[in-house]
Structure formats: structure tokens, C-alpha cells
Image (cartoon, rainbow, N blue to C red; front, side, top):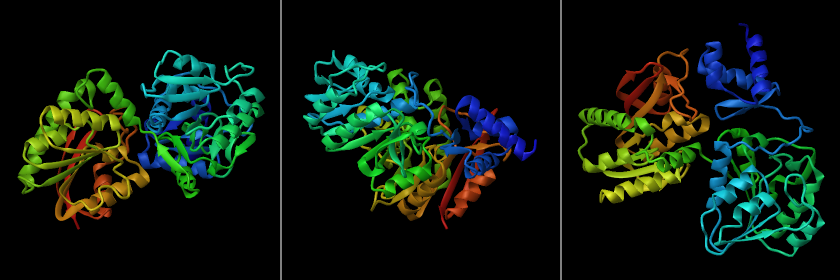
Length: 456
């Protein structure tokens, strides 16, 4: 197939499905991962699609109607969880109607003396039985979506003050700001923005870097924007440059909540025991190679803490970092149950100031590296170099391809950045590390790589 034919087929897929993954393109066209990503980059440069984390979505025309999404999606749920984290006891919060708005209402814990003000009958219905939450429903004519947007509702808002507002509908871009298709919602949104101490835009990736017909406000009218892991990185950077905080919801948080609620022991679900047995084998092999029987170890991407707990029981001093708050809480509970002292932190392994001032004898990749893309991978390597002692070690654990043109394995519901062994080792060397040794295992659809490195 010629490249032009492949590009046309990619656009056809976007038209039918509304999104496409680089992993799917690799399998469909029998091409390498880099080729699939390059195809998407070329099409984006031509203005034919928008790249996202691991794939792409169509360009949305300005006049395209913005329908409410009724189906449950992990993206929306994860965004709602990040919004809930911002709410403090005794806050007065405005919550606008949308799928994400309803999810925020459904998952609110029983805060003491929290007050919710809403123009959505669906949200008010969700909250009416919660005795710990005081709910105000704005008055006026109710439209077909179950919302009030007329002057009665606007007048009520102007007589109120909010600690926090969540605007959950419309399109948002760094150059045009917040925009909507329907003029009826503009007065109520503007009134909320004027009457709130902190304004937060809450948008899934489909509504980011997009514009609708009618502008509501400039982009920096928001103090923060919450979005998901599929929003394009260039847009995130441009929003931050405006002084707007960007909060990225993480897919791992959703998965860890499901695993814990379902009674599993940790990441892997029903395969948990097999996964941990593999770690036993590889940790034993690691310490046969490097001369360590004590010292400080940092696990990057520690999840529910199982590997950190094993290492602590072996006599090491552990710090574990993971982006999922649920995973860290789970890890702390496990450590407490075993009377172990481990410093578990809910942090992003790509944060620039991660664990500033600390140095470790061993930095352990807790199968985290293959979850990182692009700039996050670069930041991860930079943090490892900064946090390692001069004679320290870096241990990598990553899914790999059996060859550069192999199918990218879907080893979980999380999108992976999976390279061949040669590609991964070249990347790590280019980041400033020398290989001590490595080993691999191979499964039906993919392989797994373990490598020990030191600073150049």
C-alpha cells in the first residue's frame, strides 16, 4: 500500500470511529510504531487531524453541534475524580450540567457543610438524598437538557458568591478561549465566572483545542483546566504559558480504583500472583549482579507498593512514587499492615522538582517507563539521572517488541510506548546511561526487558 493510500484510510477510520490509535494502525497496516506516529504527524501538519496521547482525533468544524455524551467513559470519570480533589470542606461550589458534572455529583464524598449550586436538574436529583451536602437548584425555565439558563438563574447567581466553580460544557482552546454553540448558556457562564473565587474549566480531550461558534471568555479567565491523558501536548504547553494551571487526569487512577473495589491484591488483577512471582525472580537476579545488600532505593511507578514492600523486607530503605492517589493509599495500607516504614508519595515521575535534594543508590523502574510518551519520557530520564548517586544503579523493567515491525501488544487497557530492545537501549544510552547488563523474556505477543544501567 502506498503512503497516500494509507493516509486516506486513516482519515476514513477517523470519520467512522471518531478516533484512532497508533497501536491499531501498526497492526492494521503492518508498519512500525514510529511509522504510525509519523503518519499521524504528517496528517496533523496538513490540518487533517489532531494528534493525542497515542493516537489522533478528527478536526472538529466550528459549526459542529456539541451533543451531551451519555455513555460512561474512563476519561470522564478520571476528570471528575480530579475535580473532586479540589473541593474542600465548607466550600460553596457551582457545578454546571454535563456528563462530567453528573459524575462529580455522583462521586462526591460526604463532606461536612459543602454547598453545591447547580443549574442542572440531573445534578440536583443526584444530590438530593445526600444529607451532608446542601444543594441549591437555580430557578427559571427548564430546557430540554434539564437545565436553567435564563435571566432568573442569572439573577440568582449574581446574588451569590462561590469558592469554586466547575464549568463543564463548551469547547476550550488556548487561542480562542471558552466557546459554545448555543447562545442561551453564555449569560449564566459569564455570571458564574464573575462570582467565583476560583474558576475551573473541566473538558475531556474532544473539547480541548477546539472552537465553537460563540466566544464566552478569554482562555486565561480560568484559573485551572482539568482534562484527560489524550489531550495534545502542544495545547497543554500553550495553556500553561498563559498562566493557567493544567491538571491532567490519569487513567491509572481509574484502574486502581476498580482493582481495589473488586477485591484484587494489586495491579494485574487475576494475574497478580504471576506478576509478583516474576518480580521475585528478577529482583533476585538483580542483586546477584549489583553489589547491594543495604541502601536507599527509589521505585518510580510503585503502584500499590508490592515491590517496595518486598525490598523493604530485604533490608533496604524505600521511597515509592506513583501518580495514582488510590495506588499510594493502597500501598500505605499494605505497609502499615506489615508494620513497615516506607515513604509512599503521590507524585508524577515526570515532575521537574521530584524529590528535590534526595539521592538514591538504586532507582527502580516499576514497569513505569513504557507508560510514558514523548516529553514525559525525557523528563523521567532526567529525574533518574538527578536522583541517582554517582555510583548508583538504574534498573529498567519494560515491555518490548520482538522486532521493530512487530505488533504493539495491548498488555492492559493503558496505552503503551513499546519499543524494540535495540530502540529502547539506544534511547536509554542517548539519555546518558551505560548498560551494565540486561536480559529478556518472550511471550506469545511481546517480550519483556530488564536492564541494569549506570551513569556515563
